[in-house]
Image 1 (cartoon, rainbow, N blue to C red):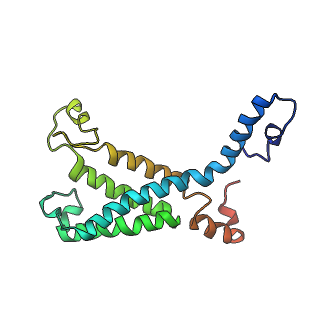
Image 2 (tube, rainbow, N blue to C red; image 1 turned 45 degrees about the vertical axis):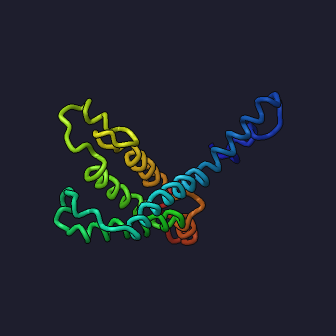
Length: 186
């Protein structure tokens, strides 16, 4: 709901004052939600991935002991280390700026799914009940894929919603609005 389309609910009128205030908040949130919600997701995810990337950048390569899923198993451990470190540093910077957000969100989803399959997934499970034991934050012998899975769903939200109004994506899109007006939804 756009506040301009239903401005009567955001003005003082015949409604009791205790009903007007929640309507004003609702109108503001409906209008500004596309501005601040993606920004909060972008900043949180950028912090988490950048922290992991900087840790890899200053640490030693521990990928040599891992078995990666296809097609990443065709690459050397050093190449996988370099790719993941680079994406965990460049991806967060683009998320902070809101630049190519959908592309880098998809790339980080792929990276996170590979991390789940390689590091966080239980090494051995025979039933769904055993697999479900890995849906935790700390590894107790059954894996720990809960937090990476939460990141995947947060990134999926950015893929569908985009970077929001406070982003370079929005600035670039609306800066060229006359040229791209035919693809803009009504």
